Length: 112
Image 1 (cartoon, one colour):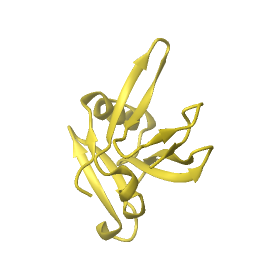
Image 2: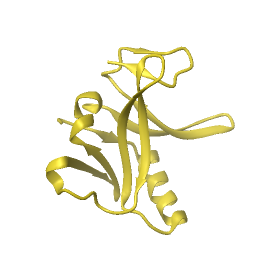
Image 3: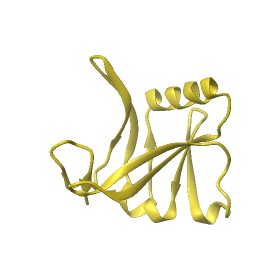
């Protein structure tokens, strides 16, 4: 994997949420097969460093926030950016992915 970016807003919110939870070492960003277009993003908090050693994943750190990307997800997330956006009353993490070629109508899944 060449790169995975984390915006300042995403880093702030990862750290804030871990503090509120009272535990965790970062967030896992991954991909699963589902939806109309075939793939969907998975974002889960990591409570500890994954078992199996660093050969199975990469850790991207920005402003103290860790994002874990597992080897199996590299082809889908290379060059992507994790952001935290606010739109009216809605707010949350958003992945800006240059590999995404198409999204389904509801925006829940994508295709590469």
